[in-house]
Image (tube, rainbow, N blue to C red; front, side, top):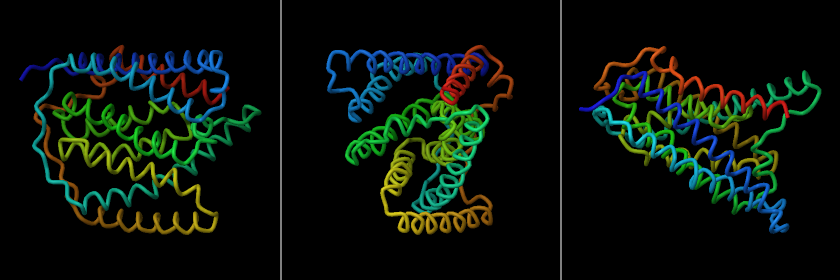
Length: 295
C-alpha cells in the first residue's frame, strides 16, 4: 500500500484547505462586489448571496482541494462496521443538547466580546440567511450545504486519514469542519456535531449516514426558529431531554458505537500539526475568525 510519512501527508492536507478557503473567499468576494454593479437588482437578494457562497465553494474551492488531496496515496481503510438505525437515532438525539447548549454559549461569548470591543459582534450566518425565503434555506442550507460539507470534511478525508484509526480521523475531521466556519457563533457546536458525523463515515466507510444526519441537524436548526416562541421552546426542550437520555444510554453501554481499528499507526500530535500546511491553515482560519469578530 503506497503511503507518505504522516507529517508530509498533513502538510499537503493543510495547504489544500488553505487554497480552498482562499479560492472560495476570494472568488465569492469578487462576485459579491461585481455582480450587483452589473445587475443592481441582485443587491440584497438572498438567493444571489446564498448562490454565490456555494458556487464559489463548489466551482472554485472544492475542485482545487480535491485535486490536491486526490494526489495523495490512499491509506488502507479500516474494516467497515454495520451502522444500525439505533446508532443513527442515538447520535441524532445526543447531538441536540450540544446544538442548543453550545449555540447559547457562543451567543454569550459573542455578546461578551462585543461589550469588550464596544460594538456588536456580527454573526455572518445571520447576514447570509437572515432574510432568505424558506425555500432558499431548504435548498442551500438543508440540502446543498450538508452534501458539499460531508464530501469535503468526511468523504475526501476518509481514504487519506481513516487508516490512522478513529481518533485521528474523527478529531481532525471535526476540527477542520469547525475551523472552516470561521465564525464564533458556529465554531463550537460545529466541532461537537462534527464528531458523530465523522464517526458515521468512519464506521460505515461512506458518507450516506453522515449526510442524512447533517441534513436532519440543519433542518432542525433552520426550521425551529420559524416556530412560534412557545412551540420553539417546547420542541427544543423535548429534543434536549431526548438527547440527555441518549447520552446516558451511550455512556452506560461500553462499546455501544463500534470502532474499527486503523490499519496504520496513529500519528503523533506534532506530526499532525507541526508542519507548514497545518500551521498556515490554523493561522488563516484563526485570523479570518478574529477579523469577522472584530469588524
